[in-house]
Length: 171
Ligand SMILES: Nc1nc2c(c(=O)[nH]1)N[C@H]1C(S)=C(S)[C@@H](COP(=O)(O)O)O[C@H]1N2
Ligand SMILES: [Mo]
Image 1 (cartoon, protein in one colour):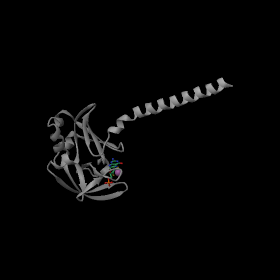
Image 2: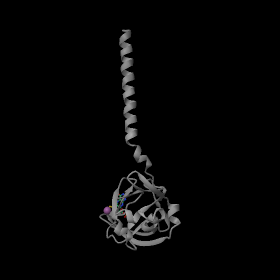
Image 3: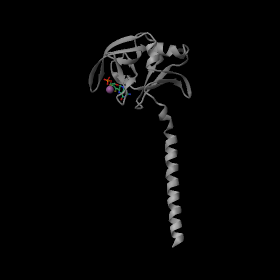
Image 4: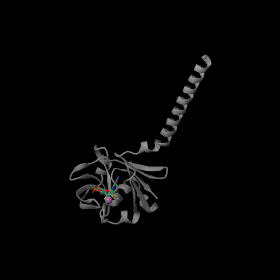
């Protein structure tokens, strides 16, 4: 009788130990998402991080006002964005980046992913990182303040306008 009770204890211990291991493995696999933050944009290429940009960093660069209507399948939204050209933003980190890379993959906190060609970034009055709309800070996914967004002025539709920006992956 006594040894049966000991066996049950052992089994219980093994089950708990397995659960702890499973939780640890999933925490490890999910770890990279914890680096994604809406209050800063990582400028990177693979594992190399060239720098980060916050709203405060962008506010030090020449401001652009962009009045536009964003068209989507669900309708149109009117905006009066404030931001900086993506070209100025990249140059503020390293003026060599636009020469060395040919496209940029943009990623939001919701894992929404899009892209722009460097040709489009170099075109005048086209690609901007915006941080305010009608003078108000852009809302984060969770309703806080301080999100940043990519807009492409010469695009007809708003599909590529990555909201809640977290990273720019240079390729
Ligand atoms: N992070 C993120 N950005 C996004 C999306 C999204 O789901 N997540 N949807 C895109 C699409 S399909 C459109 S049409 C526009 C909508 O922009 P609006 O809400 O300002 O009208 O945002 C784009 N940017
Ligand atoms: Mo859309």
